Amino acid sequence: MKRRSLLAGAGALAAAPLIDVPAAHAGQTPSKGRTMVGAEVLAADDWQALAGQKVGVISNPTGILPDLSHIVDTMHASGKVNIVAVFGPEHGFRGTAQAGGSEQDHIDPRTGIMVYDAYGANADKLVSLYTKSGVETVVFDIQDVGARFYTYIWTMYEAMIAAVRTGARFVVLDRPNPVGGYARGPMLKPGYTSGVGKEEIIQQHGMTVGELARLFNAEYLPLDANGARLTDLQVIPVKNWKRDELYDDTGLTWVMPSPNMPTPDTALLYPGMCLFEATNFSEGRGTTRPFELIGAPYIDYKWAEALQAKNIPGVDFREAYFTPFISKNANVLCGGVQVQITDPHKVEAITAATHMIVEARRLYPGFAWRAENPPGRWIDLLTGSDRFRTMLEAGATAEEIVAAWKSETDAWTARRAKYLLYKGAHR
Image (cartoon, rainbow, N blue to C red):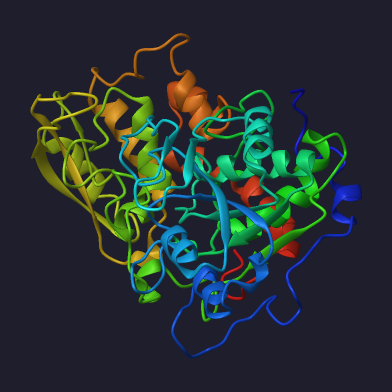
């Protein structure tokens, strides 16, 4: 697929009509009441939006209702929804696979429904699966964590392209962004698209999946689906949620979206701490605190001391030692830090991680990018360009690196505004 600049044609696309949620739902911001995710709203209406359709569901273990039942199980048991296929993303529909893994095609033993492996599937493969299963309406219900490189939003995007090509309806059952509505970090640049960033959005986008679906449909589908958009996109919004609320503010039950995302605190740190995947550090996979415990065999107390002295808002750094049992540095004692959240509403994970990487490189000659060819390619893909890497290697301070993307964050915040469904934080 030929890639293009983010701003190319943006003015014309922004003016294009958008298939929207009903006016009664758009921008709903009740000040009181229990937070209700889109799946619960649809279930309360007895699944009427799906009546008379052959439905395919893209979901994982997070697609639950308040009683912790899965939407697929509940839809199937109700007899009101004709589910002809389920599509499993990374980690699988029932969540049995580790990072970078998936469940193979199989028949779900609980419901007898065919489950297709959709991890890494492009639109061409999904078109064949929709056609094979006879899907007329595609339902997407997955809890995202708000980072560009968390792959579920790109599964949704490819599924949307496939829906355009097959004429299928697309229904998003929305859920809160667990890290809130603030946009932070650098923009993905042309030439740096990959499976962890297929379109040019910023690192911490500050949008729900429903809002992203609206943006994708207006601005990117016409470029990737032969000029077409979804003719029937429906977002079932969250009720009683505002953009400045974090997941712990909602009262909702947290279900791990992936094996290394055990708590809402993990999600708060992930948009920054995931950058350590590009280094020879352990990012805490294979411990009880992934993306909170960060370190390497050559790290000592000096790193924690240097970081704590910086007084980075929202976090403290505790000297820590741990032994991961999987992934990098498996079964090797690592020194490092535990990133302790002191004020969830002040956490800026990307800024914190930038300080951590700058100090690690300054203090330890053993700091290196993870082994790959060309060296540093993974940090380029995660941050969206080679700027982070080249500035770091040239000796830039953390403050200089963070300042380099401020204009991109500001531009994204303004540009996304027309697609937002919830009031609250707009910066």
